[in-house]
Image (cartoon, rainbow over all chains, first blue to last red; front, side, top):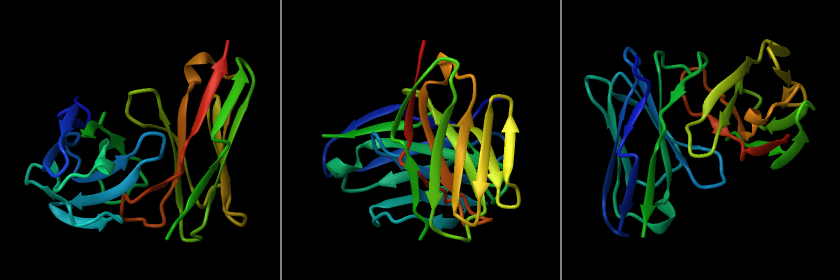
Length: 114
Length: 113
């Protein structure tokens, strides 16, 4: 059974460009969340989607957006990239909306903005 | 909003010794506290969690304790092994229905053979 899969694994972009990151949750999981992990820090919550609806949003600028598709996969978009957007972007999935059953992280997409 | 502090930031122990990592949280509404282990270049993995109606939980060499009054919780690893070397993150969530965990800054544990 596949875990949470994210693509691409690594990405290099130039300041001002736009990027799209993709996540496929574990089969049967309906909730997907996105986190940003800057080197040396803990993950920071960006978005949560459940049943294709946004259910939570962290303290990130409007340059960050996301969506969830009917098959529960998700995309995270970041516009007008800044150097400070360089980070590991993690996707996590769970079956339920609540997190108290624990959830599973993907291996992440490492984004470097130059 | 919730704020999670974690200490120490780095911890070195001899193989076979115990390791303790402590976290404090600010929001009394937080009711779920997971611990994640992240090895270099890998994804965070859930190792143990505790809910606010429980004071202690054990799983083999790992245990977590929670003091709701003082708003702190701790991870205890006994009989440490080199493969325990990793960064450990605590987290808290005040929301039963969202995955908006607030993570601590992490503790880098090194187990010396």
